[in-house]
Image 1 (cartoon, rainbow, N blue to C red):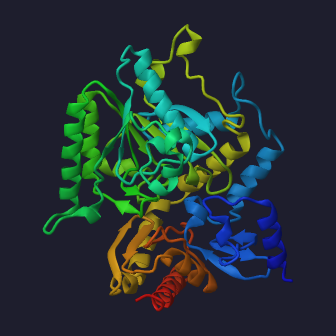
Image 2 (image 1 turned 30 degrees about the vertical axis):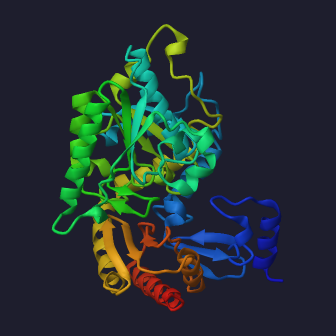
Length: 444
């Protein structure tokens, strides 16, 4: 029995793996990972895999990054954790200050949590409660986009429109207070339409919804520029401009869920910046710690914060997590920001992105590919296939070639760490094409 086999069996016996039908694992074995370095993961038998999806979109500057390692090690010798209720510590304060500065001071008062779904819950509760405190008690409805995904806790599922995740829990989810607005997904363009036309058409429909529900809607929640889990659906920044104007006109909070698309993924530090706007609430996670430790944060406007400032404790935001603002996670996040500040990360990404886009041309021009698209350091394409298990077959073919990719249904995507070299990028593109052709060989 190999080292991989031993760890695989022990994991199957003891670990319930996320987002997984466990019964499928005998046919599609787990990959036990022993170590990581740079863009590479290595299993217990010594085989390496290029992490083409940044380990679920979290890793920015590579596995085992020396600068982030050093920051966490230093923090371990100082303070591993202290509750943030009634106490504070330097990493949380410094991180809150620096994140606010990244918004030009438009947003601040960082509220920390542990993961993306928790950030969504916090933002929804903050918006609702702020309106209640302001005496706008009728504003208790929310708007999300068709195909949206904002997490898998019960509150987050109420603003998630992916049946695979939500249908099983429908009796638990309060959908009666949530409205579904058309997605500005550029793939929905009619003949002769541009991505901006689709954005304006979706914004027009949203304007009508705001009129129909005047005075009832608390907030709209949006993944700016890329709706990731629904298949990397990309839209024109014009949509965000229109939504910001509509929210101002109708007094609706704009929640930008940048859990996956923040920290440079779309080409700008925050995705919403490409529309020249700021949201009322900003949800951040995933890349915030460079892919090291669980952490999320919600930033808000001064107006929202002031809505909770009162002598009555019940009007405060009484939400908490045991590990809120954990010092180790905050130090990892500060080290991640240090890398952004010390290097022209976004400029380097633009050059790397252009190279990768060119090397993916064979996939973009493939006869079975539709809607090849790209935004910043995210690439996606839809595969024309009748294979019901295309995603699992492609995943297995890619792993055989030493490449980690996990298609979303029939949508291939790449979201690699920013430290990818051009040589590794060339190899990644070749293996992705090879896996695609091998998978489609079984299609009709």
